[in-house]
Length: 199
View 1 (spheres, rainbow, N blue to C red):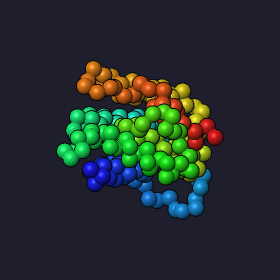
View 2: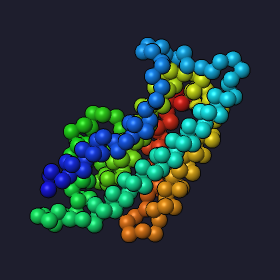
View 3: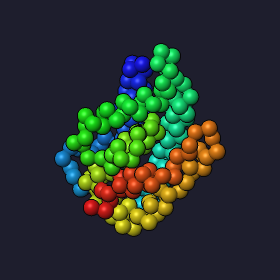
View 4: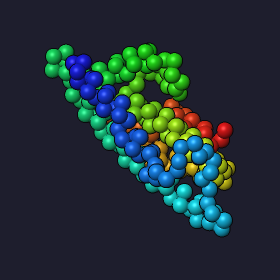
């Protein structure tokens, strides 16, 4: 029923831990201090290595969450509403389309032309949008981050993205529901999240 759908999507609206995944633990930077975060003289290489280590850790976390949401989708695809006998996955897709129509003024890579949004697709879109927001904040706070990830390490960053998608696809292949991680839409959304590093 609608309550079941709303409960499912309300948990998604919390971004399934997305914001906590991207949120910084550092509280030392004062508001309004834009572009001041940079390594001390002689520490640039150490900062680069530390920054890249964090990006690799982030990839691991995002991949783990993607697989969790995909497993949730597997369950919803099998279970049906006892009163209407409609699959919960179909109810969630219909609710997601309704939400998109109400918020179509918000810029997003997804459109209904891409087909009904599954639970996983909704998560993936929200994750990529939140990633873009957090990357934009990071680049505004530090030209150093923009230079490293947008220029010096950008090929490595794109390769890391491709590896993440390949691992997700491999982990979800040959199951009872279609695999994820291999669609053009997923690649497009993930690539779009890196826009702040190139602007």
